Length: 87
Image (cartoon, rainbow, N blue to C red; front, side, top):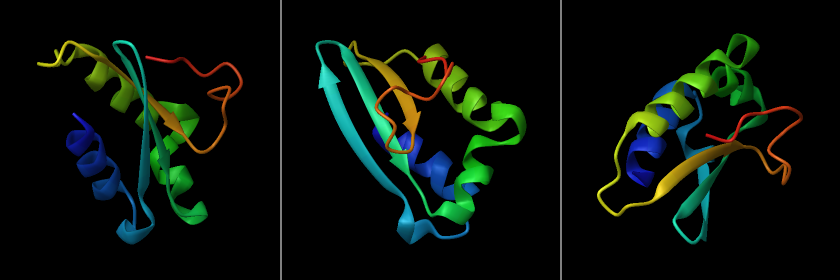
């Protein structure tokens, strides 16, 4: 699943080398924090958050073989962003 997230993000950005994923596991929940170059942040988030919402929807609807639930967080914000859904 991590490779799927990485592939989607890299297909959106101009600077693929700047894409960094960090993974934090808590039980069956896995949070993937995505960091990209500042100029690519808008591409990943999308207009009114549409792109990142689409990525989260894909993850929410994918059944993971390892029984884990995956969440995507954009950037280093520990709170997930103001009002940002975590799914």
